[in-house]
Length: 292
Image 1 (cartoon, rainbow, N blue to C red):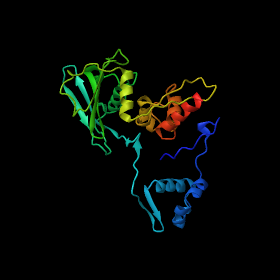
Image 2 (spheres, rainbow, N blue to C red):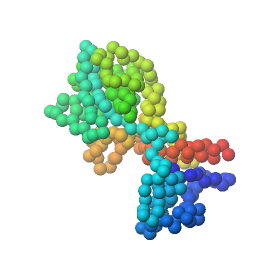
Image 3 (cartoon, rainbow, N blue to C red):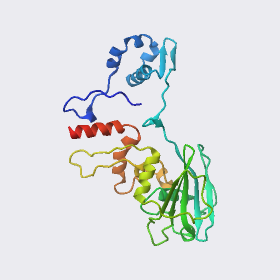
Image 4 (cartoon, one colour):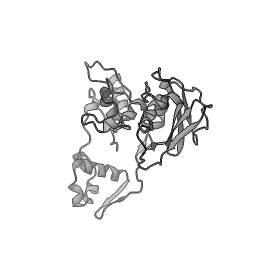
């Protein structure tokens, strides 16, 4: 929940501006405070401020009887739109002969894939990572890499089908630039014939960032740092969505690919944006501060 921004003092740094305090709210909302039950006043200051903010915007009704839904209930939104829900609907592989095999998932549920050893269960994870735009194909060499021509995933964005297909780079290649992206689809085509390159890897990441509703942003490292400014995008979002088997069991790592070179810095720089600590407002304030 974003709080109303306060005027910035000349020469101030938006990263160090103090948030409105409970005392500030109290002075502006004495009548509202008089109606708050005693148990509400014993909440932590940040919780009290949140309640006052919601009550002031009529999202909550606060009186001696407690809290009730107000006349204008709020929902978590992304730039004025409903918050995005993106899920994996299905994964497909296409053979060189054009045959398709796929596995479907139940949306909104825990899906468990079981089977005998080495039938390709672990490769499902790598297929998703590869189709998302990873710069190298980590799908293990073996029957799948030898027999597959295209990998594909079907995503679900609040009911909309989003298809991403990427050509198998064969055993000698690290990745393929042949990527097919299409929105508003009902399912996979029967054969890979419709797959023709219509987007670059960079373009795919841009499209996925738009699907996720990632607003314009940029992390500027502290003075003296050798790291370049970094914009949070779909490229980093995947770090917080996937966990490989060895990552789940690792006591020292939490996020996907955290053990690779440069990835920890990318996670550190973009995490504040993805958890909502630094949103679009912060980026705009940062730009105004730099231009002042």
